[in-house]
Image 1 (cartoon, rainbow, N blue to C red):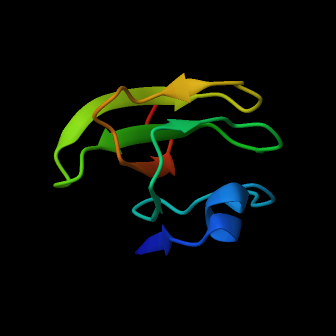
Image 2 (cartoon, rainbow, N blue to C red; image 1 turned 180 degrees about the vertical axis):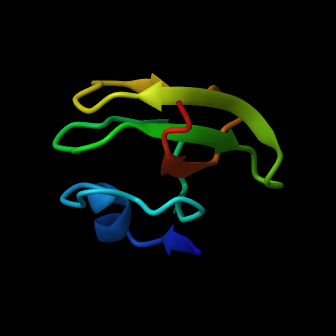
Length: 85
């Protein structure tokens, strides 16, 4: 299941406060080209997408408390999933 964060509040909260994300589940954050993992409890993978949904960058195993992960100038959305490794 893919949950979509569209509002400012949903985008700010992201996955903060969750203990985990089930395998196969994801959070799509719209209007986003960089993320952080402050206050998160688990590692994630991030797939940055352009305005058409095409992958522009993938960053794997982002640990909690990482201050900044940038998807690049073309990134418009990010799909966050449970870390694969």
